[in-house]
Image (cartoon, rainbow, N blue to C red; front, top):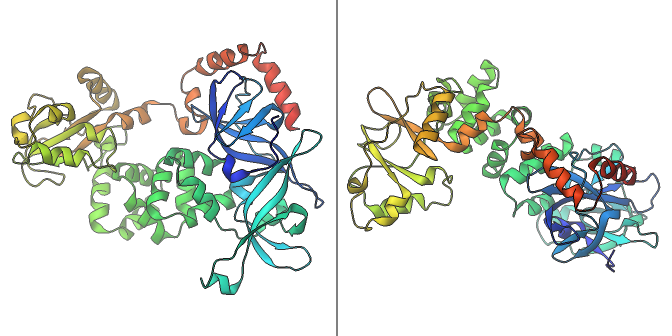
Length: 453
């Protein structure tokens, strides 16, 4: 281990992790510590590292050779591919310890944990030696001033045992700050690893838009659990903030009575497209489509079309195509005219009308088209996005390739990570990493298991 005197957990989160030869392994997502019954500093057991496939694995601290301001380096390029599972005596420093409410020994001053400092010992162990804390009081809660942050030894803070963390209410401000630079799919993976109580506290602290993005990336069971935890009024607000097709998928998993209640609580203009999607079977083009593609009338200009697909909030697949229809432009639209691919838009003069570039030959999908039919359609036309029209040629929505893949992948693929979506992929990549150190995967798993114990 390189000579590092102290490193804070929040600074570690998000750092890239490399092997001894500079090969990329993943990113640090959390720090795992083992709490003790006495007031001695907890021993740092290892790091939760997210691989490129979004699988989260445990890496023991004995495997860490250096911690720099911009990277963590391991002694070996081989890691145990077993998905990280938190054990009863362990605490996730970023996920559970930050924002915890505690008191100072001797004064009973109420404080909030802002960060935790990892320090090496003479025995090559790492411990949570110090805590960055901020005082809590009624006056501070009223916003009159912000308390200064202090760093104190672990032994001077009480109320941070596993029972305390499981029983006390806890904020989520520090954890949300760590989430700021993370994609929704990575936040969802982090939330899934948290205990249920902490997961709910994070959901309470998130704004509706961010929580909606995160829920869209969770597996079905976790989506239902989190939506069921929320008050019905807020659950309806979250559904309004979700993409209509994702909201429809989630509602279709609920009991009919609960589905009706939530739809009634949603604003009529928000629930209308969701109700239309629920009328189709989930594995049909109508059930897969989003009712909010980019729709323009023939008299719009190329410049206007480019401005629409430049919208940063527009999903990448939807931004590949503009749909040209007669008014009205909200789905279901007037008569569907055709499509314009974004590459064609880039080749045309900005002042030209979009009608001059429209492709009227592309066959559209019917809402009743089955998943195999939709899959063959995308493969035949090499599309990332395709139109869905009814018998009267009204555009109902668009199917995107990511929605098709979501239904083609095995159930639970979000839980197991990308490495498990095809048999043999995990074995192949694991063998490759094991060969870099001359060790087999079984030996690696055995060694790492012993280190964690």
